[in-house]
Amino acid sequence: MLENLDPITQAVRIQTERSQQNEHSTPLYLTSSFIFEEAETMRGAFADENDANIYSRFSNPNVDEFIAKMVMLEKAEDGFATATGMAAIFGTWMALLSQGDHMVCSSSVFGSTFTIVNKFLPKYGISCTLVASEDKEAWEAAIQPNTKMVYLETPTNPQLEVLDLEWFGQFSKKHNLILAVDNCFATPLLQRPIEFGADLVIHSATKWIDGQGRVLGGVVVGRADLIKDIYLFCRNTGPALSPFNAWVLSKSLETLDVRMERHCKTALAVAESLQSNPNVSWVKYPFLKGHPQYDIAIKQMSAGGGVLCFEVKGGVEAGRKFLDSLQLFSVTANLGDSRSIASHPASTTHSKLTEEERLAVGITPGLIRISTGLEKFDDIIADINQALELTK
Ligand SMILES: *Cc1c(COP(=O)(O)O)cnc(C)c1O
Image (tube, helix red, strand yellow):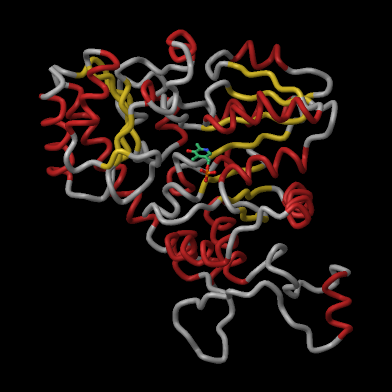
């Protein structure tokens, strides 16, 4: 019956089979392994003849419930969940790429993703060409005979560039490449890359999916043949998601739709308000008409997401002063929380780069990233406005 219902309803209702206690909400399956009544069933489980749970590094009812919901939301065939978003990204690459393979990757990707590409993949003989997201000719020119995969995220962190998923879907198909998309910022509620031709979709569930800053988690969903290889790699190398975290994340998916609706509404209203603030030189948000890829954003996303960024006038000092002046906002290295968060990349996450390197990846001196929370809009904007007053 569930299969025919809307994915949002399924995210509320999909549930691991009830136990003999007839619980309403899913219980926690905190167990490392599962018992077998008969040697024959255990033999069959190891021979992949039945899908009985064996050991929680391979599968677990709480983890499977979370995966099943993500598969429905992303319109995927299958999935695997991991301890963090980075484990999902690294596991995908290690499972599907071999020595001598090449990948083309957007140059604006998450910091740790960038580090794996630059520092670790080369150790295993996997090469990568980084391409600026906008430059279509450079994407074409980057393809080599040994290219296997195209990797990107959209919207990007923290510059909020929007990459054209329809174009990348066709590009990957034309060159017979696996297209993997980090869909962390949009969530499956705003954007489903598989509809545009992506083969794999990856999430840091730590962000909007948990949505309350409690647990780490990651998931990769997509084509069943690719997930099978990722599963075999991960089942043996051990980046499994803990059942407790999976239980938290599965519960969170019940409210993702209502939360995202509110986050997006608040983010758009904050972005619109900041456009006319005299202490701000520019504001960037995918659903603002002035965004450089506004047309692409409205084509592929149903709302602009919960993150916006802006440039406070006065450079690095003004950026730091802004953070110090906030009263309600949290200053912390996360996003996608029920609590509003502000960060200043130039003096924190990107402080080890030179000014020139920072500008190359779009980190201007006064860039502030805001992750809008679930507090009342009036309180959020009042805090931003009073802090901006003090940066003058
Ligand atoms: C946070 C983040 C990741 C990494 O996820 P973790 O759960 O922290 O490992 C990957 N991609 C994007 C876009 C992120 O924001």
